[in-house]
Amino acid sequence: MPERKIELIGPGFKIHSVTGSNPKIIEAEYVGPVACPGCEGTELRTKDRILRRLHHASLGRSATRLHLTVRKYHCRRCGRYFRPRMPGILPYRRSTEQFRRQVYLDHRDGISREQLRRNCRIGTATVERWFHDHLELKERMFSGRECPEVLGIDEHFFSKKNGYVTTFCDLKKHRVFELALGRSEKALEPFLKGLKGRERVKVVCIDLSGSYRAIVRKYFPNARIVADRFHVVRTVLRHFLATWKQLDPDGRANRGLLSLMRRHASKLRPDQKLRLNRYLDAHPAVRILYEAKESLCALLNIKHRTKKQCQPLIRRLVNWIWKLRYSGFPAMETLAETLDNWSSEIACMWRFTKNNGITEGFHTKMEVIQRRAYGFKNFTNYRLRVIVMCG
Image (cartoon, rainbow, N blue to C red; front, side):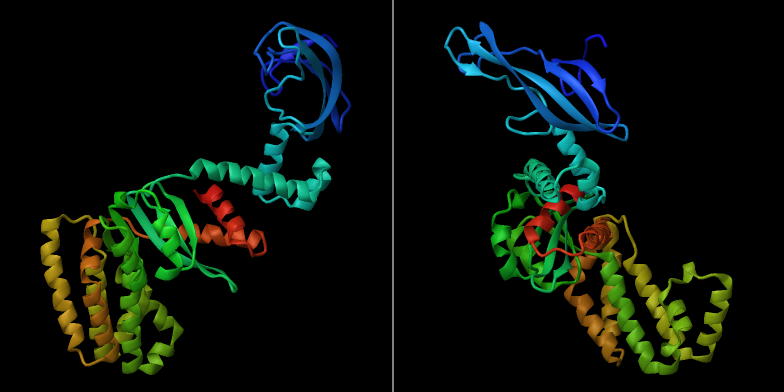
C-alpha cells in the first residue's frame, strides 16, 4: 500500500502497511524532527536501523502490534551516537503509552487482571504495575493542594486490623479532598499538622462527634462548625422512639407502626395517615409525643436563613431544650443535654445549607471500590484508588 502520514501516536510517524486481523500488525517508521540530545545539533548521519516491536492500543476489537523502524544517528558536531526520543513511546518499553492507558482504564472500570491477561497477552503483574503507575501519576496531580473553604469530615470503616478511616471532602466542588487513617485526635495529629492552607477553611460540617469538634477547633482556627442536619434529626428521632417504647412497648414493637412514626407527616399517603391517626386516637400520650417530634424536626429542617432570621429560631430551640429537660423521661433529658451541648453548631445549620450528604455518598462509592477488590489490606493502595476515582 502507498506510504501515508498520520498521527498514529503523535506527529512524525509514517505507516507503511497494516496486515493481519488479530493481532493487526502496523509497519511504521519514525520520521519526525530529530536533534542531538547532547549538543542539540541537526547535522546527523544515519548509521543503523532497528525494529521495535510494541504493544499498541486496540483498533476496534482487535489487538494491535506496532513494528516501528527506528534509526540510529551519529552527530557530526559532537560525535555522539543516539536513537531519537519519540512521542508516546518511552525508552526501553515494549508498549506505547496509549496501550498502557487503555489497560489502566479497562482495569479501573472493572475488568479483572486475568481477563486483561487473556485479552492483551500481558502478565497479571504487569497489569497491576501499570495500574499503580497511572494511579500515582494522577495522585501527584492532586498533591500539594490547599484545604478547601468548605470541608466535610466523617469516618467510615476500612478493615478489622486498621479500623476506621477519616474522609475529608470538598463540599463546594463535590470531591474527596483527602483520606487519613484513624478517627481520634491522636491518630490524625501527624496528618493534620501537614495539611496546607488550614487557615483557609471557613466552614466545616461534621456529625455530633465531640472528637471531631475538638479537632476542628484546634487545627482549623478560622472555621465555623456546622452540625450535619441528617445526624441531628436522626438523633432526635432515636430518643423520641425510645420514649415511645417506654409509653407503649407493644406499639413500638409493631414494624408497620414504627415505619409510620418515623416518617414525616407530609410524606404519608392518605391511607397511612388514617391508620396512624387511629392508633394515635387510642393512645393520647403517644399523640402528644408524635406532634412534639414533628414540631421539633420541622424547626431543625429550616434552611436558608439570615443571621437576623435565626434569632427567633434560637429562642424556639432554647424553649425546646427547656421542655425536654423537664419532661420527666430519661431519653428526653438526654436529648436536651445533646441539643444544649451542640446548640451553636445547630444554629449555624440554619444559615449554611451544606451538609455531609455529599460525604456519605462518596462513602457508598468507596464501599463499591472495596467490594470490587474483595477488600483492601494496604491503606496506601486504597487511598490512591479513592483519590483518583473520587477526587
